[in-house]
Length: 290
Ligand SMILES: Nc1ncnc2c1ncn2[C@@H]1O[C@H](COP(=O)(O)OP(=O)(O)OP(=O)(O)O)[C@@H](O)[C@H]1O
Figure 1 (tube, rainbow, N blue to C red):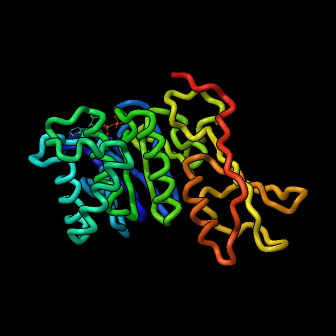
Figure 2 (figure 1 turned 90 degrees about the vertical axis):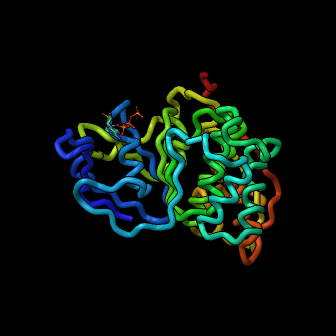
């Protein structure tokens, strides 16, 4: 998808919130949008998600899109699972698949026990789990996340990190805004900052900057694998792991934690196969600050 000279203002004579925004969103990439409060990040994400239209400029090549808004409207007349099935059907899933995915995503986020609770009665945290589940269950080609981690518990934040990494590894584009500068920082392919009413390329956060929450991408997973004799790991592995050939011929792969599940699946599914010898989780070198 491509944004060309995109501008947005609210009302015919309102001030321009964004102007001259050019942005390419290729497949297989994780893109962070940063910027200080009120600069227009949510405005940009709504345009990218297709739920708002630019006042000028154009957006070409809309993929299948799912969006987690900054505020999830939790007052719809559904139970949690009923809502997710309904969204699945809207995304074109058949009844069985929609039902299975609804159950699966509620379980993944640790909200299975609330599946029959009406949306209006869910706690803020569980409501946010439903908000992210509704976006993930359709396996979108473009995933747009506006502060989607906010309100989630630590386990669900880490699960969302993994789910985003999985989507990107599967070929999707994911675009996100988050107040934690290290949220998926090691995994982001590009960072753009909304500033002065437009979008400019930005430097990723320093890897040793203080972490605001416990689910950033600092931790890594090391995987020792044995491949066919003399072979190097295949190209294009999820998370682009670093590799080191050990004296015994095995290969040590190091990847940021959110990508580890996708990487393991890719290695297990590779032809010829790679054998997993050991998987070890390494904590971030910097202590988290909460
Ligand atoms: N629907 C709207 N109608 C009128 N003005 C709006 C609307 N939505 C946003 N704005 C204005 O556009 C500007 C940018 O808002 P936006 O929510 O996009 O910024 P943001 O960077 O996401 O802010 P935050 O970090 O606080 O979430 C603000 O001045 C806001 O008041």
